[in-house]
Every structure is written in structure tokens, then in C-alpha cells.
Image 1: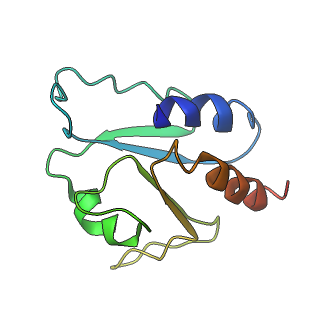
Image 2 (image 1 turned 135 degrees about the vertical axis):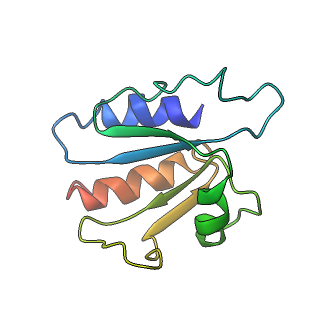
Length: 117
């Protein structure tokens, strides 16, 4: 639900924005597998879909997501346009868990970044 919401209600509503979305997938629920994965659920050209077999993103960035506990999934981390990634990940300017459950908060944070608040 969260990924399709991002596609429909964020990316499609702002087709000319320079948003970039990284969608990271891993096996979390029964039936999840790399073989059964639809790597194009978020098909917008500004989205990059990645499979994370070892849940590295969850382990590395999960502690930054307010309200989530390990393993962190169905969450978002929002970074501003001037964020730089060095040896350690930067702090996000917004986080939420679950993506769909926090959709109003995420929408407000994105609109603020786009100057549409």
C-alpha cells in the first residue's frame, strides 16, 4: 500500500519535481521473495527499486525512524536536496512508520521541500 501510494499520490501529482525515491525491498512477510518481487511497483523514472537480501538498509538506517523497531520496514526517511552522504549516513529531516499510516505527515514534509506548503 505504501509504495503504490507514493507512486500515485506523490510522484504522479508532482511530475515536474526533481524528487528522487529509493524503494528498498526485502523478504519480511510470508510469501516475500526475490523471485516473486515486482521491482517495478513504483515505476516512475525518478524511483529506484532495490532488493536488499541482507536487510542492510534496515540495519543501517532503521534507528533513525521514529516509532519503528527492528527490523524496520514499511517506513520512510526523507532527506533534503543538499544532503550529502559521507562515511556515515546523514540524519533524515523526516521519518515515519508506516509509509501509508504517516502519509499526511510525509505529504506535508515533501510539499515543504517543494516550496508548496
